[in-house]
Every structure is written in structure tokens, then in C-alpha cells.
Length: 179
Image (cartoon, rainbow, N blue to C red; front, side):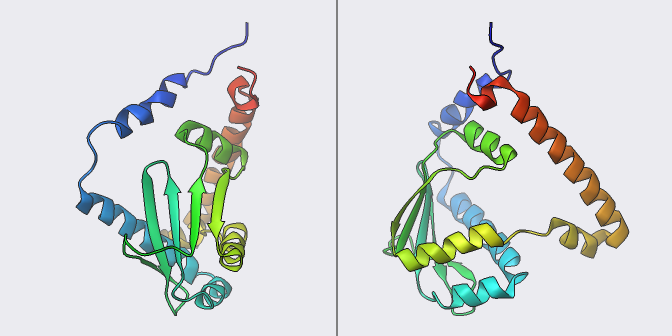
């Protein structure tokens, strides 16, 4: 008998939440605004990324997952701004996998989710370069708050925990498709 995942109840949890009452529009806008600010923070740590995006100034990318979408416009400075919802995107990026649990499992294995891309090829290549080359340096940001040595210690513990969690997920039958 193949063991079942102890987390199967989570598979339908998101669907039950998503099919319920929808959040107010002001909350959706605020979450999108915070996500954009975070992305800009990460981009500002990579001057080459900002330079590459600056060449795409004015272009709009719409990212979609299930019923949720966010339109981002590239600024002349190589950063991101929220585009009007009615704006026509130059690039559409849709996350094909609808299960948040399988996306999280894939992320723990180091896999990228399957995405569908439609639109400008050069713009898509630049976005792909960003995904492949830009990383958030959490330890550097933490060092600004608590200092270098404590941030390095926290980062070291976090890396060991993440490695152990990846090993655990990889060893589970549901992550290999045995279930």
C-alpha cells in the first residue's frame, strides 16, 4: 500500500477559499502594489537587470494565475509600475499549474512552474533572463537590520532548514508521483 500525503486536505483548501467571497478591490490593489514594491526592491539590487528592463520602457506584461492577474508596466528607470487594468499587454504570462500545493512542492524541489507565454518574443526573453539571473539577497537585507554576523547565522540556519525540507519533500511519495 502506497502511503498517501498527509497534506491532501490542502489541495482543495485553496479552491474552497477562492470560490468564497472575493476580497475588496482596494485590498487586491494594495497587495499588488506591495508585490510591485518588493519586485522593485529586488531589481534595484541588480543594476544590469534595471538596465535591461529600461530598454523595454513602456512595455506591459500581464501575469496571470487562475482568476488572479496583475499588469506591470516597465518604467524608463528599469523598474516596475502597476499598469491600468484596461491596458493592452505586450506579453501575457500565465502560470499553467492551478494547484498551489503542486506549485509549492515544485518550488521546494527547485523546479519552476509551467507557464504559458503569449506576446513579444524579445520582451519574453528579457523577462526570462530576469527570472534566471535575479535573486533576492535576503541575508543582505537582514544584515542592514541586525548586522552582518547575526544575519549570516540566520541565513546559515535558514539554508540548512530549506535543504532538509527539500530532502523531506523529495522523499515523499506524492512528490514523485507514486500516489
